[in-house]
Amino acid sequence: MPQGTLFPKSLLSPTILTGISSQGGPDQEDQGTTLSRESIHAVERDGLVYLVSENYSYKSEAYYSILEREILGQRIIPSTSSILDAFVVPICLERAHHEGIPVADYSISQSCIPVPAVIYGLNYFACTSHFEVLQEDAREREMIRHVTNNGKYPFCAQRLDKGVRIARTVSIFGRVACQDQELADISARVWECFRIPLVEMICLSAPSGTCLSALCPVRYSHLSKVEKAILKAFLSRQEFL
Image 1 (cartoon, rainbow, N blue to C red):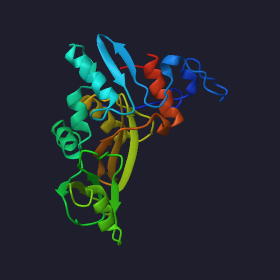
Image 2: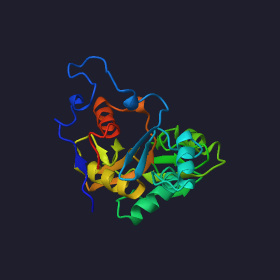
Image 3: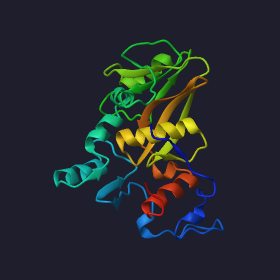
């Protein structure tokens, strides 16, 4: 099984990047590494093109860019099939489980479920980053109506047993900035399974271990300084697999 990589603190320093001031001043970035909103970056390595985007969802600009390259016969990562699988929670979890990744137990419903639980919408407009956490209060039905578009669509539910917490971290080419070995290992396995260069992992962490709950897009503006430094290092080819 692939082992997750924890970046040493020295490597995570912004000084590893070309044009970044080590004095903490304003970034002086090369144009090719500017992480502006909705920008798409292509990095070629050993005959493979890695497409980096903050939004790979179906019918997005990145999705169509990847599809065009696939039609032209280019070797492109990620693939459109991986994108379609990754952002539909039940399909994501089944594919990940098949590859040996620990995943959360889930059920699909359109009505009330045992709480507490985390729920994800399963309709065309649903985004996995917009999940709801149901507790034992009067807002439960309101949250379900929101996720199901007033009961028109089902949702995916994952029970939150006692002691379970939701952990979120960004996976960048299978690497993480946090110092959690379990999350690092899951990130490495998710990379091997889906090959999505930039994605946020939502995990359920319990004393017995950590498992994958869902994958979701991540905006550049939501990345920490350390995560931006890691991503820019990949884009400038100062760090690669």
